[in-house]
Length: 143
Image (cartoon, one colour):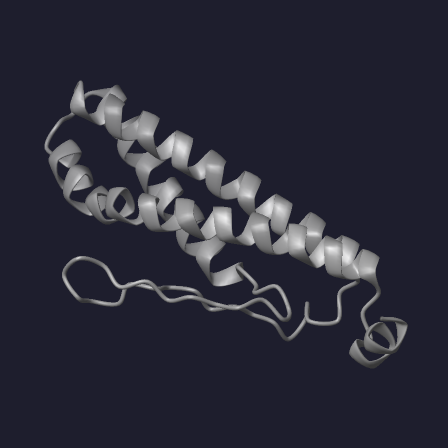
C-alpha cells in the first residue's frame, strides 16, 4: 500500500480531505442546478417589478439584480477539485445547461486542506444565494 501512496504523490490524509472537498463541490453544484431556473426567472420578475413604483418593488428589483450578479460571479469563480470525476447533467429538454468555468489555474496546486476549505466556502455561498433568491422572489410575488 505504501508504494501506491508514494506513486500517487498524495497522502491518505490529503485523499480524505480531497474527498471531503469533492462532496462539498457536488452538493454546491446540485444546489446550483436547482437554483438556475429561479435565476433565469429574475429578468421577467424584474420587468414586472419595474412597472410598479413602490419603494418595496424597487428594493426587491435591486435585490434580485444583486443576487443574479452574485450567482453569475459564483459560477465564474467555481473551481473543480483536482482528480474529481466530473459529471455533466442533461436537463429534461435535452439541453445542456452546465455553466461551470472551473478556473483551475490558480487553485490546482492548493494544499488539500485549503481546497476543502475553499469548496466549503463555495457551498456556503451558494446556499446563501439560494436562500436570499427564494426570499426575494417570494417578496416579489407579494407586490
